[in-house]
Image (tube, rainbow, N blue to C red; front, top):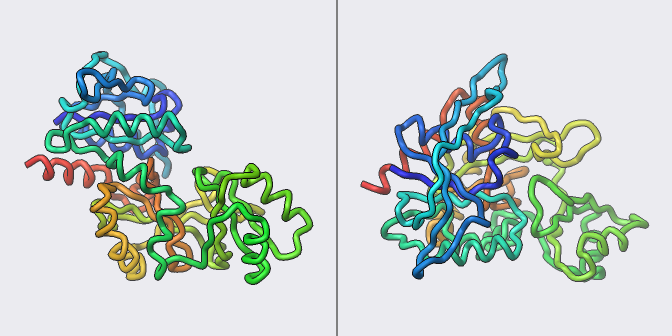
Length: 320
């Protein structure tokens, strides 16, 4: 099989952490071809989606003293071609947020891939419809109290009624720009002005004290939970995201995680969102990550498993 990965520049990826690299390694280990490209290398030619693709070979990471360690020269580009993406068996769209104009235009190009020939993970239409913060609001029975607004008075009323809340920019990733808001903070107006950029709405959720015990990332494959990792805040930082220094620990997929996943699964499948990471704090769904969900390296490390292999084997079955 042939797999194309639309990613950020490969030289900037961390092979010991990045889920895209883990997926590419698993595909190569199964004897498949792996090609990479970036969103500025996509084109529409003769009414179809094309890309300038590079064939890559990877030196897999090795487990040394409890850490994934990569070789100095861990990837090699072997060939470059311009061809229709429909010549691939599957295309992974795994560019990190923000979902900006360039990202949006890339999804329009990917719309022109014939789904009968090539599976796009995740669906370009699904990516456009699923803002990683707002998408969760469709599942009111499993989320904490949440509002989305850029109106200071609305946000203030929400925070004062709950004493404390967490503010999240709608387009952030890895915990970027998340703020802890408290009733009576004299900086409140300025914090809202900076976060909303005077015009953009933000998400505000009631603060969940259980966040101190961790922010669980659960990986879903076609709506089914296949692995989880707990991310725990360290030091004075209230965020547990790995990108801001949260430490990770092994954690099982709980009955509550399965209940939440079952609520989401029909909608995720209908939207073509096959590879997803959900965030769960204290038994509540807080986010649905669809652009470039991560966590596989950490889950594999802590549990001695290979989730990427499971993903590739699922894809193989879709082509049978």
